[in-house]
Image (cartoon, rainbow over all chains, first blue to last red; front, side, top):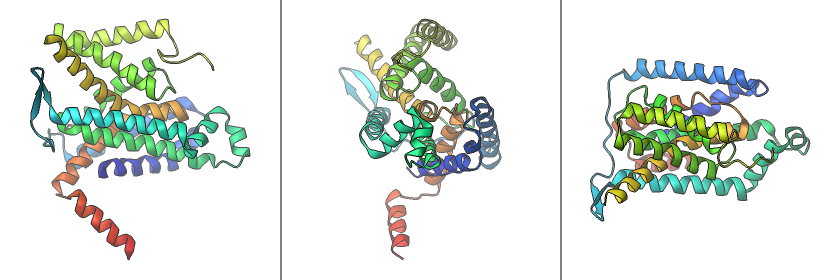
Length: 222
Length: 72
């Protein structure tokens, strides 16, 4: 929780000082955030070093269901993740803040004219995204040993999830996308080795994007 | 039996991946910034968690401290 807040603060600072000035130049923000990635990785290397670290899971042990061994911590994290995603989607769909954000996406100029603070809303969204990233990092950390590159693995996978699932489809897109990507990877990792499963994920993403360029769950209403 | 094991595995990976991807989905989907820094934020979250645990900050005490500060 603390780490989520910490990362959210860093994200808001990044947004306030740099990203804010680049909203009308989408490809420059790509370079910009990549630079942020490189710089942060190097700073982490300088401060914490490059060696592996382990965090002990707060809940150890596993339990058996129908003879299947389920690690307790991973199971709890999965439940927590689903709850968190559903809760955020509820915030997005039901509350005042969600209405503001949707208004901003639909039409920026009109939303601004109606007296909506565009900068503040952008900042909230960016901060919330960073917060989610921080929490995710903190929760995933006990599952594997930490080194400065774990973000890399998850960055690529997350991209596939978001693009395959459909940009802008928060609940259904993310869940279906991660089901497709994670499911493919797991199945191929069982029947063959790691490299082939990675290749299969790439292949699946390419085929799906060829058939449905705007994502599996995206309705074509743009 | 094999099938149940595989489906549990798929469920766990799906949820974990959804957790990792959700922040990216928010930033990319809502404000259109392709956040390549997302991986760095994940790493940062993991390291900060490690840092706080190594400092032995119990969440309850931290909370009490914050209450105290806000009261003063």
